[in-house]
Length: 164
Image (tube, rainbow, N blue to C red; front, top):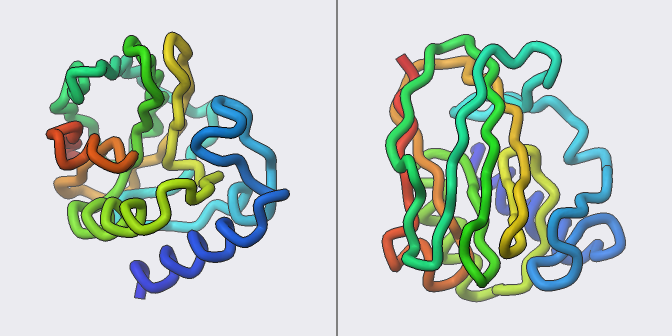
């Protein structure tokens, strides 16, 4: 059910280009819309309130298709500020999700590489820039983050989040 709803949101975002931003069009500039502002619960948590962040985790991305660190541990219930820096010379992103969701989204991105996003669990970061995700990890579990730009995920640009 969640994957179906996620696919529908991506489809709607793709056909409403005026409400979202594209991979190549406006990096780092998200336009607010109803879908992005909702605080919908996902299997891996929900958008967090920046005022309630209890921890900041810095994650860098490189053109070697790697994250540093690529393995993160947080406590269930924590609101975490993920500060994502692109140290490379090409566009990268960090997308939070379950392993199944990220694989499905990566396949969708191969078919629609200019798909547009404006979700609170995605940081799309231009070279040399930094973006922030504030996420409330509501449930314990093993989750992932990955760069779903075609070829990056397949190249090993993936990390793990253990929520204890």
